[in-house]
Each structure stands twice: as C-alpha cells, then as structure tokens.
Image (cartoon, rainbow, N blue to C red; front, top):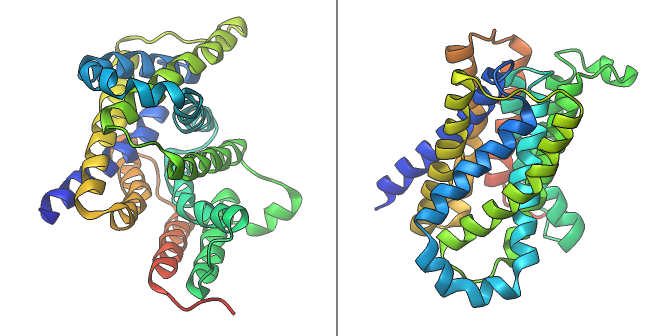
Length: 295
C-alpha cells in the first residue's frame, strides 16, 4: 500500500539524515577512514548473511558485470562516505546535511550534459535556486567571500561528496536485472575492498583513531541503519510507488539532518542556514513541478 511505502521512505531518509550527525559525533572517537572501513565490515557481514542463496542464483549475471557492481561500491559507498566523514572534520553537520540537498540538481545537470536530457524551464530556475542555496551556505551567509575564495574546507569537500553520489545515481541507469539483495551485497563488498587502502593510508599518516565504546556504537549505527536498513526500505519504497515518486523523498535527508543536528548535537541553527535550506528545497520543488520546456 502507498501509505506503507511512504513510511518506509520516511524512515530511510531519517536514517540517512542521521548519518551526517553520526559522522560529527565520531570526532575523537573514530577517525573518518577507520569508520568508513569498519562500517562496511559490518554491513557486508550482515547483508551476505541474508543474501547467499540469492547471490548464487544471480552469480551468472554478477560475473559478467563485476566491474560495474564494484564501481557502484567504490563511487557511491566508499567515496561518498569518505568525503562526508572527512568534511565533517571541518564543517558542521547542518552544513553537510543542507549541501546534500543539491544532489538532485547535480543529477539533473549531469544528465543534461551527458545524455542531452530534455530541459524544462522549471529545472533551470530550480537549478539556480539550488546553486544560490549552496553558495549561501558555503560562504556562511557572506556570498561576497566566494570572490576571495574564503571557503570552509569542509564545505568544499562536501561538494565533492555530492558530485560522486550524483555520478553513482546516474550509473544505476545501467544496472543489470538482479535481486535487490545482490544489488546491495556486491557493491558493499566493493566498498569494503576499496576502503581498506584508505584506512591503511590513515594508519601510515598516524592519524587513525580506533573506536572506543562510543565509536563502536557510531560504527554500528552507520552499518545497520544508514547502510542496510535505509537502503532496504528505500528499495521497497521504489518497488511500491516507482522511482520518480520515491526519489522525491531524498529531499527529506537535509531536513532530518538539520533537525537531528540541532536536537542531538546541539548545533546552533543560523538564519543563513535556514535560508539556504529553503532555497535548496524550493529549487528542487520548482524543478519537479514546472513542466514547461525550455525554449
């Protein structure tokens, strides 16, 4: 039923919104690359525990497309989270959450640039509204600072996270016909393998922080809720109401991320952050509703 799909999608985006908060809470308890690696250690163990029979059935398809599945894991899972957790060393969880709202517009821009996807007037307006929101946020309410390149390093890194997730989303257009468990398990394995060198680099730089008790709780949250539960519920929602309608729920991620940052971490919600959130979400809403073709 649609109501169950809506509930599943809301819970999924709530879990994803909490991921930025978890990354901020991890400071001093587990370092970014150690967290990225251990997250996938647990996630792979959990997903393979429930997926082995299905993986055996899908193996002929997986074998032919193994580089593709591993690419999904490297780009969408490892790279995105490595950039996210690194960005949170330098910027607030609120900023990270709001910048993520730009993902749909980056997807639109890449689809237009790479595949010539038809452009609507509302999409053009929405795109510039979203850019304005991100610029306001990245400049901490002083857009003129962009001219002097006075940017927060964490916000810049977060923009890279947005870009790689948009690339990951576009890659899904070529996904082979396999069960959802396979679509989760093999990329997760790719993420585990590709995150190991990143953790090794952190160890070599003597910046690795191994998890304490709080660090292990954060790691388990990211593995169980932000990785597995959110993805399972999102896939179920897509199956029930379709990808276009389900995709709109991703816009709740920055909303939940912002609220959780204020409630759990106690971060101060500034006026420019509220304005940036409204501009970004408003731009997405305009892009979704306006259907007039661009001349």
